[in-house]
Length: 273
Ligand code: SAM
Image (cartoon, rainbow, N blue to C red; front, side):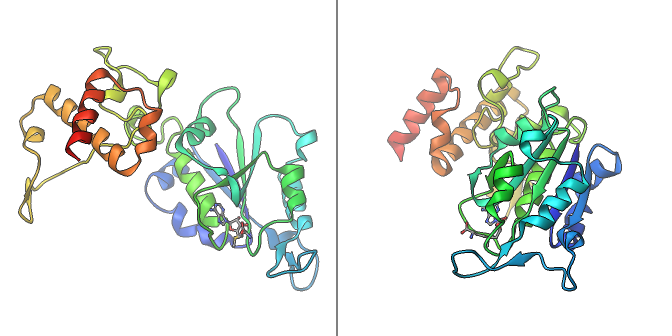
């Protein structure tokens, strides 16, 4: 997978690309990240990338021409003339919400998955809207807050997509067994035919994790995790997934496939709360 990031601050990404899973994915050629400095596509003495907004008002707007030139330099044509295989994403607080299912779609090894993902980072008041109209397939927001620039949002997308690419995580299945894991037809089963989501995620939040020491600051690890009974451990984990989801993100329960036991557990908890 090739990521192309268009930014006025390419230096922003150096630390981010140098660590952990992403570093390994780059070193093993599973991921390539290409940084493009928009100032390199300007033609004036001051390398001007921004200008005042038409209609007046606060702030500056990123100009269309350097962005169009940067896109042309990596063979990205306007949407109307583009071959399939590339996807251009505008990072924007006004965009649709980015989520794990979309990360999975962007990473999926299929004929429709993108070959290149181009991420356009805004700054100031944003990007001249004609770039969005002409080139961008998706306008994405990483959350309901306003960042100073699209670089952090681009980093979030690179990280969350890259870790789902084949071979990037040590265990192929670990992308399923975590918060916001696949639901419905995406669910896989383990060797006993039990939906993995029953002990993974299935669209819910992950369960709590513990490691040694078994006692820390007077708090003991839940006994059930120490007794080696895998059936009981699975049930405990499922219940605590449900509990966390109910308390922190109750809306996720509405879409998640829940068994009768799950529903009975939730009903009991709601009565106690
Ligand atoms: N005037 C814009 C608004 O009110 O929607 C905010 C512009 S913001 C200061 C500058 C840039 O940061 C945006 O062009 C965008 O690229 C990026 N940005 C800010 N918030 C974001 C978010 N929640 N998700 C993705 N990108 C964001």
